[in-house]
Amino acid sequence: MFLTRRHIFSAVRKATTTTMTHLNPCQKALFHDCPVNELQPLRLLLLGSPGSGKGTQSNRLQKNFGVAHLSSGDLLRRNINQKTTAGLRASDYMAKGQLVPDELMLSLIDDELTLMGNPNWLLDGFPRTILQAKALDSRLQKLTQPLNLVINLEVPEDVILERIMDRWVHIPSGRVYNLSYNPPRVPNTDDVTGEPLSKRPDDNPEVFRVRMQQYKDMCAPILDHYSSIAVTLRGNTSDEIYPQIEREIVNRLGLLPGVLSVPSTTSMAAAAVSRHKREQQQRQTTLGEKQHHQRKRQEKRSPLNAATMSDNHTESAAAGGP
Ligand code: AP5
Ligand code: MG
Image (cartoon, rainbow, N blue to C red):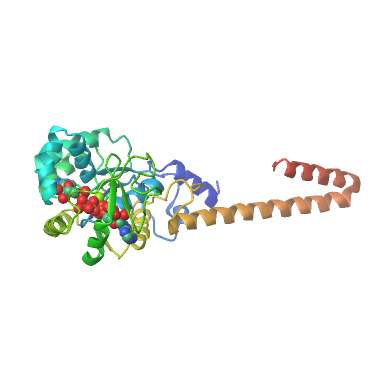
């Protein structure tokens, strides 16, 4: 059967979690301009310095790809907020900008991984030590869901400090705001729940310096550990970096940004939407031309029937029919 771009496109949307065995590489290449591998679920680790935009990018990826987002920092903050035993242990370390002990982090994350319930997910800020990475690898191996992409965000240090001073967070969800870049619709209030926003106790220049140093120490060994699937993306703003992230996902995993009916902020999704519209217009034009020729042929044979047919077409079109 000859597959049009529309057929292929809808097949990809349906099969975001399965391999597209029914399409050959040429057919798959019609989706976008990049070379395409087999379609794989997204199992992404997002690394980056404090304030590099891991949380911001995660929110976009959640919206555009429908992935589950697990942030170790958000998880710890929720535990502190709820005064759990783990939270009480973690709070001192976090307030000083130090890593919490590996066994504490691992016990918290382990439960979350089990509850994930979505084959497409991204980890934000975990693992940060080789011991955590090895523990995660063997856990994911057992679940037959190994990481398949590691993205490290690199943003200049001077840009970041200013952002962090302006950051407000909604602790229960981990949503992040910035007074100049993405302010809440109502001051000091979360857009979704209407609950109050908070300042993070580790968002001050002294603790930021400790967190930055800690990131510099851990970054190289972790990138080395995942060297076969890791990539570093650079830019001054999240808007500059986001299209690069999308491109890596499309290129390496064959996934397209998700629901096209939702207006998208991304170039890739916008291109897919306009391509879809173009194809729709082409189909309508072809249909219109066919009907026109059909009427002409009918007119030649029997002018009276042709007039009736034309009326039917007008009614059908007015009713939204074919
Ligand atoms: P964590 O919560 O992970 O903090 P972090 O790594 O320091 O990263 P941030 O959350 O500060 O930054 P982000 O990259 O998410 O940036 P964001 O999108 O918010 O960890 C906190 C602590 O928990 C650690 O110090 C440690 O103690 C502990 N911990 C966590 N994981 C651990 C682990 N695995 N092991 C042990 N301990 C662990 O963006 C920053 C701001 O910039 C926002 O306000 C945003 O709105 C704004 N912004 C984004 N883009 C732009 C733009 N283009 N222009 C202007 N502003 C922008
Ligand atoms: Mg964050």
